[in-house]
Length: 108
Image (cartoon, rainbow, N blue to C red; front, side):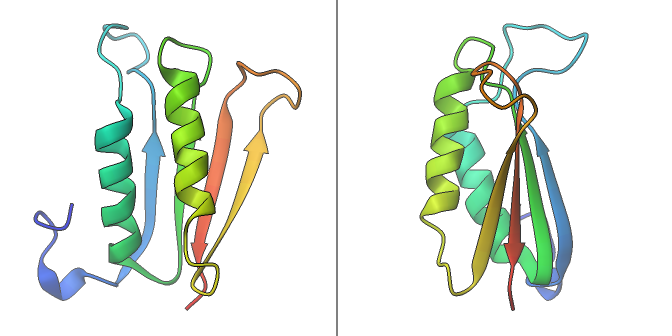
């Protein structure tokens, strides 16, 4: 992301949205992977404007999804709380396989 977006736009992105897992109706063996997801999240956080938001929908119910979801949660938790805040919303609280929405807001 850092390389694809012109340098003049860095710090000016209002929203970045992630929908993890696999493409609906697509090949279910092709899924997002934690390593590339975390790298993309880090890039997105650097590009985000003040008051900008990153949303991440993670699906722990598919193979590898629970691990990726947990790693996204850990990534969110380690963000600088002076600059970012995050919220985790479970689609069905108590259902470990239900989708999760992470909302990361840049404070300034």
